[in-house]
Image 1 (tube, one colour):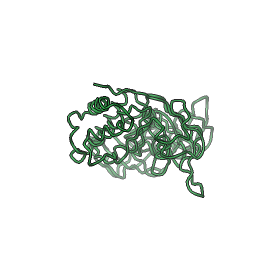
Image 2 (cartoon, rainbow, N blue to C red):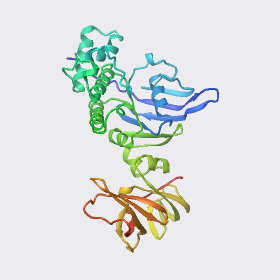
Image 3 (cartoon, rainbow, N blue to C red):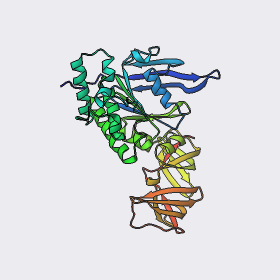
Image 4 (cartoon, rainbow, N blue to C red):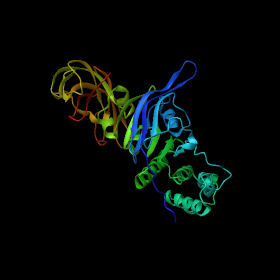
Length: 358
């Protein structure tokens, strides 16, 4: 039987913009990015941030207003979708309801001029790869949502594209199925060494599947980095709050020595990576799971009062009132914890808070 091979190629945007209408509203504004061959890079952001327009420009479904788009080092800026070696898996799956699973998977191959035997071999290999061997004679309506999504993936994979694009591929699935299908997509991507550009607004999904995440906001890139870089060291308040929840505090950088800043947060002084900050007013981001609740009056803690304590199974969630407003704290210790109304101190571990730009 034929095997599905990878023709993975890099993707590069050089100062790419996309404007709509006479008023030239920017959907994507002067964006430069690169996707290394064989890597899965996620475009993440809220609705209207430009991520789907960026994906569609890679596919050739939207043409750039300015700038250059390169795939495998070749300039494809002016090429139509039909002349780009790119496959796309849509949010709606876009399966033909009157065709069998096998016919759906074979569809693109039939229009690409392959011999009949190779079409059959590739389609069978594609179904095997996504765990649907034996499902070829079924109609899409006879499959679950997760199975339909895997048919759409197989149909894209059999074309052996240079770049595989996913547009919100899991949004129609329930939470448990989303987790399983995203793991399958990631496993196939790594097994074949595919270049994948993946669009989602779900930050947990992005953290789970990506080699790199490009966070977009208001038509520009807010930050580009590995999942851990974006979670541990967000560049600004938007990224801090979009990639997992974050508490944002107004603070003061008292002094900077080398790469270390002395930061005052109420009665607490913290020594943190300066990240380019100089002395003066600043902002601090702290993840809810990286703030510890200590006894009231503990030295080096921020005084607060438990306003709400909620048990959610795997952890406890607290709303703590402080001089900086409400602080959201998560604790994995579900067996004991303070009750509403109790006075506490909030402690910030060394790897907890980070200075961010405004």
